[in-house]
Length: 400
Image 1 (cartoon, rainbow, N blue to C red):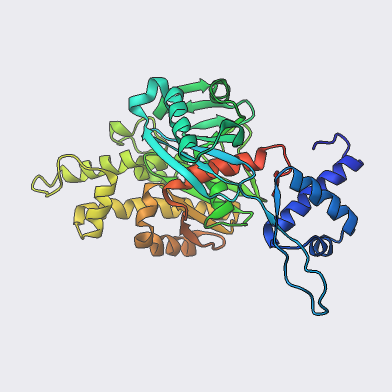
Image 2 (cartoon, rainbow, N blue to C red):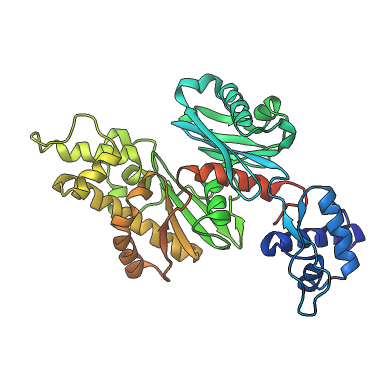
């Protein structure tokens, strides 16, 4: 369905075909006549395009609709066939890999995960076995799969399908797309995991149908995905969104007394990433030998202790929230988004600290914007990877 000449007949037919499919998807059940009226196309043109879409299985017909006021034959209704094809989404993290199969409406038919580190040396082979199990669970064959999207935890060249740097997987210049397509019989598309996440939230989540979106993910590390005019902004060298390097306190940034475990991190990540929170808490506890903190704890534990009123944990988390607030305010002033989404492990505590973030925005940002937690939960990366495939696939589905 491609045409080299944008003004040609083939191009116009492709455009109209996509418009018909979009119309049915958004407004179905709907008759051929109603589609023609909605799109201001001739009824013969719409009928011909609908027949093609029916033959290709993108549409399906359902029993007659309601008769008009004047009576007469009830028109056949059209519906988008969300099971015309299926897409596999992979959320590939440093701790676990989560995989799922979705239909074209983003409904999960099967989902599973496995730990990353135990399979690190043969990650793609473990993924292949996992995907085969998912296909069996969903009663699907390889021919039913339109493509696979993978969100990788690092800087990614989407054109070459190369993960430039993913420390949690020990990958440098890793040809993920090439390696994956050698194992799977369908096209594979790869991108940074936070870019993938913001696509998922725009498709089915808290930023549905929005064109200007910032998603900040804070967990083990810190990342940011940005949609500008509805399109991902990846940067000149695929490094856009490295918000972990943002400086949110110049005085501290200039100091030389940061503890050794912070070396190798960006400034913001030193304070708000999981490892940074744990290290800051350990520093705070040095002066409190009788603290009730366990010997081993996570950033999640520090947040919970702060919520429970622990003064030392509260001091650490207060600083974390200040840094996040300034980072969000800076991004709002730069991007002027419709919404800022907070994802990653920190989003689970968002309701507790969002009022403070909004106050910082009010005090320091050029304009305001709502700040919300991501809506798609643990399947965000999977749904986002599916969305990546649907946006990039050269078919009648593209740009739906």
